[in-house]
Amino acid sequence: MKLLEGAVDHGGSLGRARALFPNAVLPFVDLSTGINPHSYPLFDLPATSLWRLPEAARSVELIEIAASTYGAPSPDNVVAAPGTQILLPRVASLVRPGKALVLGPTYAEHARAAAIAGHEVAEVGDFATLVDADLAIIVNPNNPDGRVIERDRLLTLAAGLRAKGALLVVDEAFMDVGPREHSLAGDVAQGGIVVLRSFGKFFGLAGLRLGFALADAPTVERLETQFGPWAVPGPALEYGIRALADIDWQDAMRASLADTAARLDALFGRFGAPVVGGTTLFRYLSLPDADGLFSALGESGILLRHFSDRPHVLRAGLPGSEEEWRRLESALAEWAARREDRSKGSKP
Image (tube, rainbow, N blue to C red; front, top):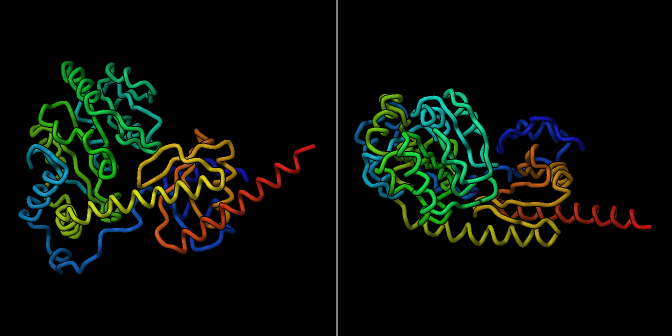
């Protein structure tokens, strides 16, 4: 089937999925995002988190816990926001409009946010070219292929950019499940570096809208003034404080996600859809018939993430239940059988 142009700009839209696959088996199994399907345990919120404005002391507590969990030099190096998405154009505006270079292919919102901030934007594939930027943006680990840039290389780039008043932005939205030794969270006090951290993906609570920017203290102060008081809603404060402090849950979840990702790799591989990258929150597939696989699974009510500019690749999130695993296995088996029939039919 022909994919709808622009129908799926991001993962996670069931409305777009219904438009694209109107006859799909319901409910959809949404594997189009990199959000953990096993969220941090829900708990009863204090009523005050809903009917009172957030207390300043709770905001301070959240920042202190975030600084410790992410490895920032101090709480003065952390600003909280209602999701990292709202931070993107604000961070891009920290430097005067100039040349913004985004290491790609990657999450499209960075380029859009830089353009909103007035920059001339280009996506580049060569890390070395980023030194020419006024604003250099890297997603690390990268979305969607999981590429990781080593910390030493990032620090060298940051030093070169800082010397000319330029800025390095590193989006570490998936570093909770990445090689944390390559995080720049502990280096932001040097200046010229902004690290973005997302709460909702790893903790599986994307609807809370909570994210953080880590930077030197003057940059944090500049960002804070743009939000004013009560930037983070009360429920997000409560979940952020509890979940970020729960190191035992985080360690256990990392191990569980690694096992789940390995299981997903084996399942796709069994049916001839090789996994070539990703993180333990999403897997990256490359195959000539990626469009066909996307369509076949979509018609079975299983939504992957496709990319109109890269028709040979797909991104797959993690199933959240055994029923979802069974549906995915069945749909893959049907796709593989039809592919085999077509192959046999094309032989002389």
